[in-house]
Length: 260
Image (cartoon, rainbow, N blue to C red):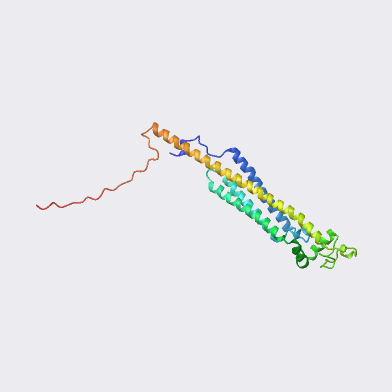
């Protein structure tokens, strides 16, 4: 006799409010992954020689794309577990660990980008002189009305009106620093905002697991109580009686009659 048939009134699902809250948080978590994939894919497809390519390098964009795909995949695992939490505990447990991984990935990307700009002066001076193509340098010169990096003689980009103006006597170092500082602040806010969403998703998953375990424990405790009450009321009824085991009789030993 199964517990579900004996105790039909025992809860078979977690509370509705918990499931709704988990669904809303999971939707926000999924939206963060979709937004990451959409933005990174857009910038990868429209890569150009504008100033944004200084910050959103191909390595950064592909890292964000992979992180967004990971978030969407982990959210799918959580949704599958939430559809039947009492039967899919392993899905919810896997979802918890996947969200922890998403938190570490987003935090790692933010720390990596921050570490790259610790020595921003030398970094962008080297990039200006050796790595950035001429259209990128020309874009900074046109937007900042400057020429070269430190001065007009520090590797200027040709064809810029600011360099053709003899009155321009300063380089684009401050323009580069201001642009990168402002945009890095937006990127850091975006990344750690997604980390916050992932932390909330982790908490909601833990709540779902706790409530799910309580519901399962309550169901089995009620079933056991009913079994005991039925056993006391009907002592002749045997629940879950073990199958009889066939025990072979020991072999008989025949002893010869003692000699007289």
